[in-house]
Image: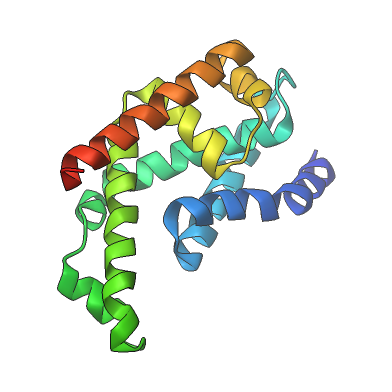
Length: 170
């Protein structure tokens, strides 16, 4: 089992790390969450029945690890001030700083809108956008049909756009 899991780790580490990096936009945090994901996968490896693709199973674990991290660190997720963002991007030229701050605020607003979605919509969006899973893989992971995954994704995207429009009065 140990050699099997080592092979699984080597094969899927880059994809799980990339998935978590897209969610966190923080290399150190993505690394930490990826390690936790594989630890949890190792602990529960004996329960993996092969009902879904290995990546789907690992991405599902990673998603739950990420949610747990957000719950534990809620204050960090609650949006940064413009001043804090300016400090982060202090090394950039001032002519591009305003655009960078606006883009970061939009990204944060989109992330907040995503996390405010009902769970089934949020899960489908995260697996589609951040894990780059097909609708069939999402269906397998969430025990829904491929078509349901498509419909839920479309509706979630619409909800996020509405939330952003409402926030920015567009």
